[in-house]
Amino acid sequence: MADISLDDLMEAVVRGFEVGGVAVLVVGSVAAFVSAAVSYRRVGGRRAYEGARRNVGRAILLGLEFLIIADIVMTITVDPTLNSAVALGVIVLVRTFLSFSLEIELEGSLPWRRRTSRPNPNVATRSG
Image (cartoon, rainbow, N blue to C red; front, side):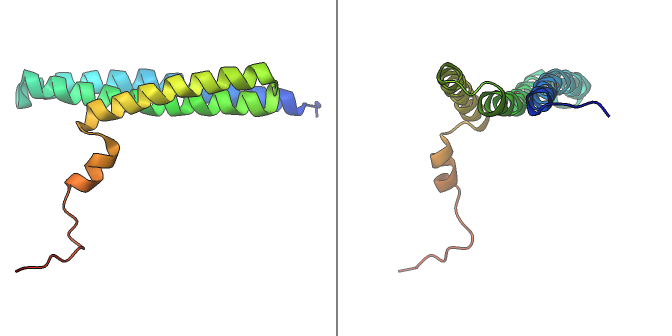
């Protein structure tokens, strides 16, 4: 059996997450567009568009998560230098901003407002 170094193994893991992230982006987007095309006649153009937009956004969010994992694994295992840590920080900040923006776009409200805007059926309310 061939000897494989930890760096080689981690590079393969990173490559796997990168390929997975790109696959999620491509497959998720194509599926969203196909779903919108199929539902166009049933629900109308506007609702089909909104569904496609929401589903593409979800695919982007999930794809970004995969790519962030790849960046983290690369930085802590393959290239643990100060420069790569700073680059990782910038990449994570940019991707977190994108994820946050997409989440607001998809849900229509800030994440901390979303939880408080829905009534909690487990909380008893006092009357008079």
